Length: 245
Ligand SMILES: Nc1ncnc2c1ncn2[C@@H]1O[C@H](COP(=O)(O)OP(=O)(O)OP(=O)(O)O)[C@@H](O)[C@H]1O
Image (cartoon, rainbow, N blue to C red):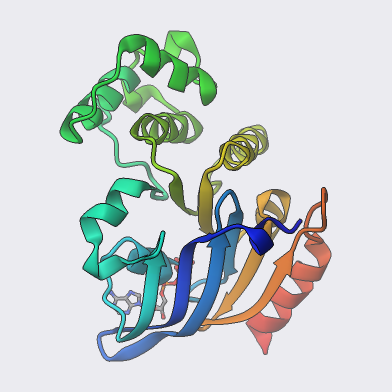
């Protein structure tokens, strides 16, 4: 896999340093995610995954270095950057008492985006959200179905860049496979995806590249071979060593 070699970087950490309450959390973080690439930032508890995501979402201001999205520094071009990005938190922040269709329509109207019912149905079809579920309140949904709704919304917003926070935690194995397929399809259609996770196996299944994060530093990068996957055992060993080093 060499997607990243020729494509423009849409997500980039450049010598990124972030402090939280006087503690240095991210230490000179450098990585690039190319257009159409799936990059998994893998790390144990407290490694700095959420801090990295929050920095790219504009909630943390770097003390030095840059978080750059599509060539723009996040903190100085927040509105522009946010219009290009979709964020899927660990628990989707949609309204439980609204149906999937109502949720999507409501959030689109907030963003002043007009879509027809047919276009909304096309998005639901792309994420394989069954027709008979679309008019049900989200409080009756599984986590996998809520994620599908959130991704359908992102597709309708035409956001080309996705940030996924522990996307497969709490999903059963079938839902994980389905989700990974959906993420691969998104990337195949041009989406750029940064996911943070502590799931070595899941990251190796879906990512084009993995960055191993430990104690706020990138300590290794792994790339899938052309047409293949990143070797789970190699990453698992490195992950375990890094945890105990
Ligand atoms: N609001 C905060 N106040 C104090 N320390 C914080 C705060 N947020 C994060 N930290 C610290 O920053 C470090 C990185 O946390 P972060 O949440 O980014 O890690 P993570 O890799 O996402 O971990 P997890 O997998 O447990 O969610 C940790 O040591 C954490 O205690």
